[in-house]
Length: 254
Image (cartoon, rainbow, N blue to C red; front, side, top):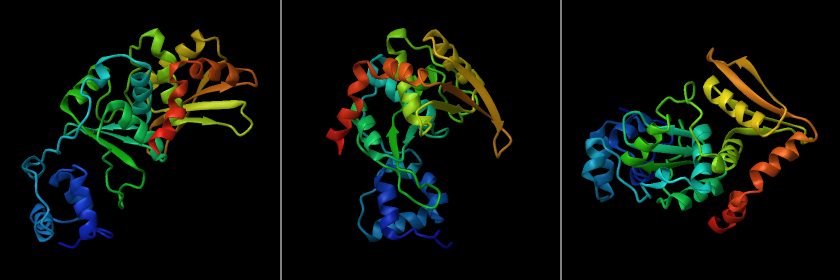
């Protein structure tokens, strides 16, 4: 069985060291688990029984992170709702961001090992891996499950932390026009979009929902905030909080 393009021994080793199981690695590499094991044997890489049996290696993380509401937790949750992924088969979650500084800050807040999934033909965006059954269960309790993009609800968030959550959502999937008069957030979930709409209305913002049909045929919803005075009003709400220190803290992670 030939390897997929770009799957060198080094790439395979890095993928294994990132915590991926053999079952996760097989379709990316294009080799059987025995062939993968032989590559690791050849380079004398110690193997973890859980990874070989199909379970990802457990990494360091604060497993109570999503149990206690803080501004940092709410911000990370907002990012995860927009740019995160729950593995359906394994007890793993993933954060994807083009800007690695954000991933490093997430890892810092979650007290997690900074483990990135290997870049390859099926993944071009830096992706932070967090392996934890408890964290996956806590996210499920908030309504965030595998294949969440079309069904994720708007979580029940204490009012004190709403602004930090919304900031995470905007940081994860917000778009702002060059002139600074328009902003929209994109989601495949009508439930989530309507929940966010209600929050924006409660803040006195002029906002509306539009929708388009995506390439896969699913409806994509966009929540807009328009107006010269509306965006500064929103910025004041989401930045004039404890989490306004977030991107100052990013410098510490570089």
